[in-house]
Amino acid sequence: LLISLISSEDTNLVDIFLYWCLVRIITILIAATGFQSKFNSAPEKNSSESLLRLLETGAPIAAINLILFIGGVSALWLVSFLFDVVAASIYGIAFKVFGVLMLIHGITSYIVQPNLAELYGRRDLEAMQSLAQSIALILSICTVIIFILFGLWGKSVLIFLFEARYSAAYGLVVVMLLLYVIRSFFGYTALLLLVAGHGKTMMIMSISILSIKILLSISLVGYMGLYGIALAWATGELLQHIWGWHQVKSLIGIKCHANYSRLISKLT
Image (cartoon, rainbow, N blue to C red; front, side, top):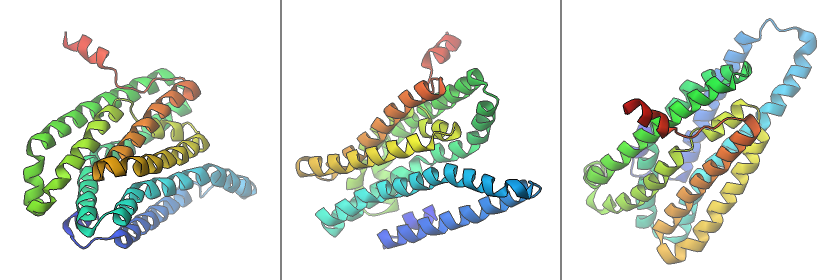
């Protein structure tokens, strides 16, 4: 789906929304099948209580997914409203390219989520912190490498994949990547909060950060144009991870940032 979105020049917000709905439907069907096979032998007398607990836990997560989707496309809506078609296309391409470059973060989160959940279930917070910091360190280094590589050859890649006029997206992607380099230092804050059952806290954070993104975008767009919206979006992401890092430390009792001192001590 991502490849088709990037390769198509006619992709619009309706297409993105339909793709998102399709992915969610497939995810729900797979999850429902897994739940049925996992809990098929559960006693019927507890089924209503289990359903209520499931809804209580799942409702904030569903709200978070909706907020994340709105946050992801709100910048595109704002650009489409304030700028012409060419500017909207440039920002759309920058947003798509950035998403592909950061696929490693999304893939890794799905891989490590069961391990983090298992460690938290055993209340092995020391091992959980060690795993979270190791992942943050690896992803932080990978993000720096991606930033350097794109900084060197990103404009040529954009011209090769699209057209020369869309090379203006290069600067926007660099701004997003630069703040993402800082963001990656704080690790998987959202994932840790969800694993530990703090979905409501994460939902409140997501709503607050979405509001900040929109207000910053409106404030900066008059001074910096497309770069103002890109900076506002990336700044909001960074603020959410700083806030999330503090919440992980206070609610779960672990530190999830990249521990460079451990790497340096091993190298020396």
